[in-house]
Image 1 (cartoon, rainbow, N blue to C red):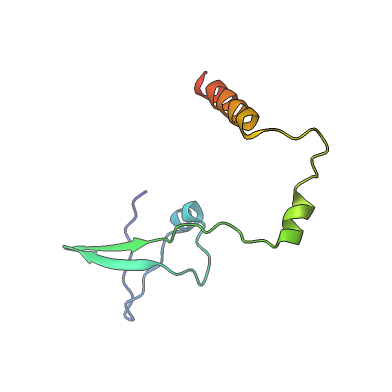
Image 2 (cartoon, helix red, strand yellow):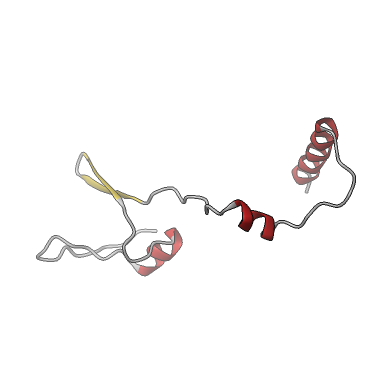
Length: 88
């Protein structure tokens, strides 16, 4: 996405809506700014995973009532799932 923007008398710019939406930027978002040669680079921070309490985690994740699995059984299941995802 490219856009031509105008610098205000106060040195402000408006980031176009489609770019803000694509990066999920909201009012008050912090952006990194750097100078690279003749380019001004704005960088959105990496999205941070939502932090939830243990109680919230237990509320969201249903209790497993089935038999327990060994680490080896879990590895086999994950590898089988990854193998299925590689195929069309």
